[in-house]
Length: 490
Image (cartoon, rainbow, N blue to C red; front, side, top):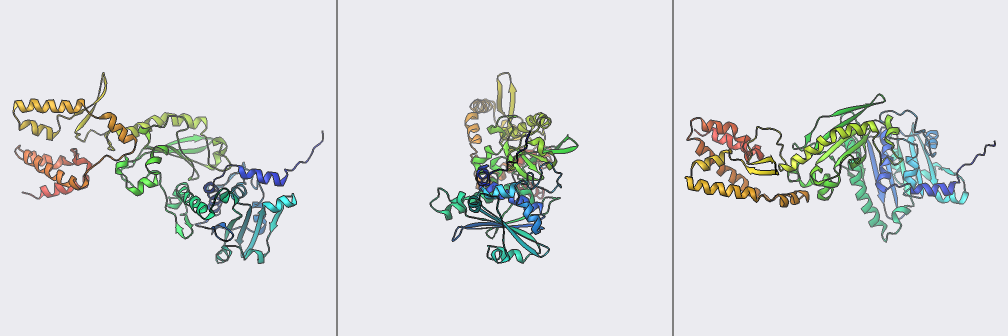
């Protein structure tokens, strides 16, 4: 048996791996992973479509020595099976090269460490001409003419990744200015989501500042944790090979409870349904989202469900994470646990829609409508024990009571369930006349307190329980104001 050394043909392989499937935003995200691994707290992204177009990524991380930089420019610079630190977001030792060259024909990396500035460059056209793996070692005179190098030299340490000859961005475009601007706008949204836990400075993470052409990115939290109506569910831990996977479900507020900014941050009305499902984080960096892994189907009534799944980089091999870190699939033991809890999560989202964005799993509220399960299915009935209904019945004669009963039965029989479901499913906000809400509530409160005053102790009971009464329970702040006002009236 003879052994034949057969290295890959450099021009063909370098051109082929450019089509590995990176988008501009996923390529940039891969480079930011390296910056975070290097301990960077600031990543400055600069791009220009004018003159000789370029895109540059400058960080203030630990930087690399000339020898370290040369190793980093090697394809497969790290064994994917080598142990990594908890903060290491790398995997295959390919990201820097494959991500960059998927977007440009010339990749230059300049790094500063211990006062030494060094640069290495892969130029695809030179590799084609030479038919060899020719890595360029730039002289200082060549380095200082590159964009952002003067800013790098002002730092104690850091790394600059420079993309030039942006052929993948300009191909098929009549205007590279418009193409690059549009794609970088998409990239900004992508990065704000993928790194939102770093951008917000979550506990245990060094807060990251991402700047794109002078504008700092704000975190795009897919769980809307700042909204008080977001419902966090119980967190579960799954142990695999001595490592922990954390599963934390959330039920988002109904769309009618979201501000325009919050709605935009979760993908807008169109993305509300599409983005339901699992959000898988590898070392708190989002790698895949908007999927149920075929454990349940996406549907309108589960679109408020989001499940945060935290996995460590020590379990990469079980999740079959790809080079781009944009796909992953849970191992069987995790799927079994997810399947066990996913129905409970979906039910929580359905309940929000069934009861117009309110939690109804507590009996303390007195609702106007009751959801009834009978032999013929589910129906909705007006609550005859609601104080307002009872007061009206107490003030009319028998003939009027019969007419009122007929009216209530007719309303129940003709409840527009199909139309309401269609409106909810299409994310239309149910029309409310906000400017008249306070006036209506005040009028209703005045009527209720007037009726309750005729009963011994009724007024005090009404003061104590008004916040539990629908519709007042939907406006807690204003209801407190009403209660204070009536408490001060003797």
